[in-house]
Length: 115
Image (spheres, rainbow, N blue to C red):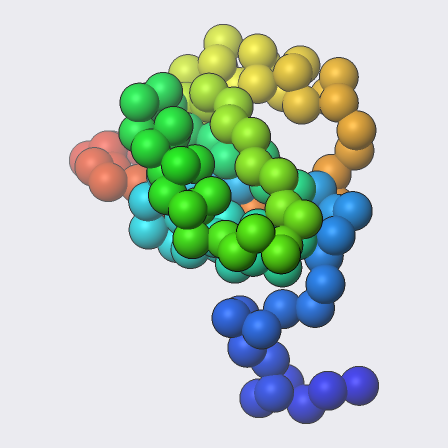
């Protein structure tokens, strides 16, 4: 078993045949995760709430992943602040092959003053 300090997100094992869904993947940590997983050969489902930004992020991932990598990248609209959007995205994801991983990349930009 490799030591913990040997792990490097830029040198992941071969993930061909694995499928991952990432929330908020059009920028920041979600984009980085999508890029690394796709670069390792995984099928990546990038989600986000803005279709234009999501398409641009997908295109950026595909530009940066080498041709030798058998990765595939798809997009799925998902606004986690809208339960209808969450239900629709879940129904779409449920109708496809299972997931090997789910990266719930979320943060609160403007937290409420009261709970």
